[in-house]
Image 1 (tube, rainbow, N blue to C red):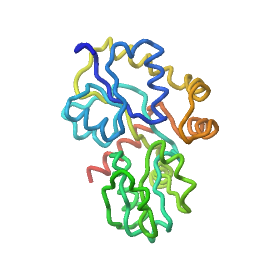
Image 2 (cartoon, helix red, strand yellow):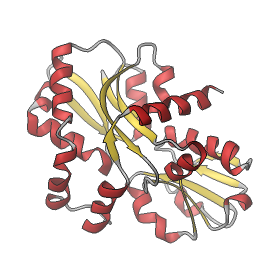
Image 3 (cartoon, one colour):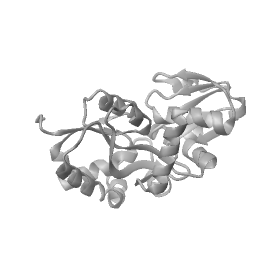
Length: 250
């Protein structure tokens, strides 16, 4: 890739596909070096300067020396999100340990906030490793995010959707990831970038019709985009994001 290209790290989940397709169709992707990563890697790459822009967990914004939210598009939910879940064989009040998804950063902070402020529990926190899903047993619950969560929900009797629980706590939507830069980006590039992203929502039907999704039915994918994921960063979502960052700071 040419050194002059803007480097992007994008979440490699289903919910980011409208953004990726819109960048490809507009031709904006030709100006970029795009890598697809799990959320924790998106964050790490933006933090250490390996990329210029990331669709990153909002929890890293305070850690960046120069953090600029460069777009009015995001990955969010106003109510259930379906892809960020705490799964358990026992009710949350009886959970003794919570395994934390190694792919996540924002969701890890969110489950800690909900435990303290909503559920009023003090579990042991365990940083999990690949394969940890097999250890969700008895009074050990597990946080699972991304496409894996969409297929895992029906395997457990107790399912806590973290975005839905956040809405119960605050009355606000929850923003999981937004477009952030770690430096000042050329204004002409940003105009083209945001013009490209503005077509993301209208491309969702094409994504559903044209692509096969591992372990997910077409109906599941349709329901996810229709009823769970929201892509526009509006005032209510910004208020939810500000409150979440305030809680982290506490």
